Length: 87
Figure 1 (cartoon, rainbow, N blue to C red):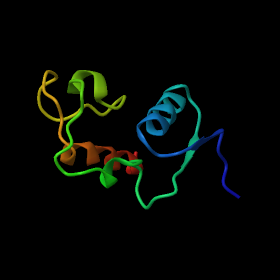
Figure 2 (cartoon, rainbow, N blue to C red):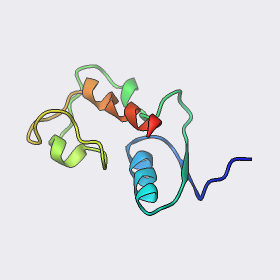
Figure 3 (cartoon, rainbow, N blue to C red):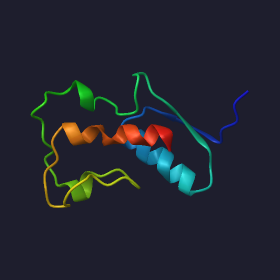
Figure 4 (cartoon, helix red, strand yellow):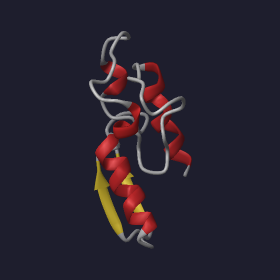
């Protein structure tokens, strides 16, 4: 039997941020995601997608977007959330 303190449903941006906050709080969360990787629905959008706010406000806690804070990230860098699966 696996031992977790919290269960987070969904591995999108909000779910990953919640799991990060739980870990920082000393808890051991489990994240359940329907897709094969912890990135939510981002990979299913069109390739030319850019966010409407700058990277400064869209980075995941503990995992900032690469590059400057004042740029508008494109879809491809959004896959950086996959790195959280091993953290």
